[in-house]
Image (cartoon, rainbow, N blue to C red):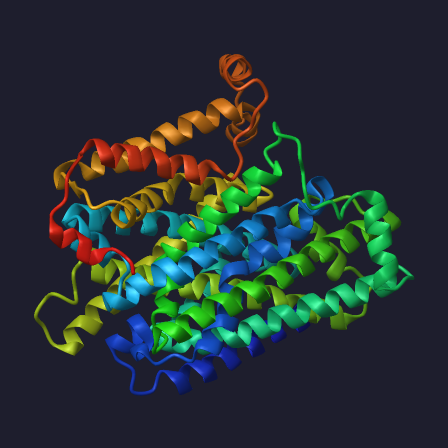
Length: 510
């Protein structure tokens, strides 16, 4: 399929986003950028959050993981359900009662300045790495199938895409993203459904027949009851629950959209509606992975997991229509995960690190500061994408979940300590507790999974393997890493705490 034709659809799609951005950013101000003037429609927020949560990584890596992991990923999704219930009925009421713009302001009011800065730092670190990893994966797909054929280098592709994202986010912020995410989620889900239908038809069967074929191959197995496996059911479900709590409920990007909704009740409806749709959509992605592997086996296609979907969708076997649909779907998955990340990072840095909302100054001066921060994060994203290209890691969703388990643990520990106890912290020692805990969690995970780290670091760790066999006896830590990290943080905070005063009780959730 002509790369020029595919490129023209990319440009056309972007121009549509610019029109939406222009319309929604009229008369916008800093309040519009940071929190959408607290007037967002909860249904639009719920639908748009699907695109933000899934991103291009889900679009490529989740189907690609079916070949080796069956439908085990859905165990994590079941854990998400439990996590989102906690978010809707514990965290969201707390944020609304305190009228927060940045959720990390809670940590300052509860514990002090260092807790606030630590929470913001770990969010910035985790979101920057996670978002740029997702961005790298999707740019790589576009590069292989479009831009390499046009003689455009990877660096130019990454730079242009980030500039395009800046053009439609720098003015309207959250107010604009609520609408562009809705558009992009629509494009992604339409592409997902159409691709499943077309590939099932190409197998010479119907949907029921495809499910039977997947079942015969073992792809449709959801639960893994091997206790020593990294994908053991309880580990995935518990891990998924705390991943949802940390990566959505304690994440400024996701909560920035939720608390832009006018009322608490509407925000809760948003979360639960989003959860129901997300569970259906993730199941469809796994079904897509199953039919892709059936098709690959039928045609003798052998490629790395992350390349499976684009290789088949853009092959000469299918008409140009599915290739165009795939490209629109993949960029629809790309933009929500990056535009929201840059916007939320800008908000977090301005509010939590610079304290822009506490400083005196005109609206124009504050806007100037915000724009400088916004463009700086775009530059950081560009550098990080180039770093990922140098690393050239595959099946990147595995890395993202692992990194999240390390960096979101302190957030989980800080918020849970604030909500579940009335104790006060020694503000000067908070950083120490929040740094030691992730390092301990990383050490325990390395001891449990030496083979994974050997593969990622490209080194042999025979002593680590020996210790792992002695201590863990084959048990591998999976997505429960984030819970372990949170517990380490909680324990560390307890050691530097003392009994609280009555004022701390005012910040407990209802």
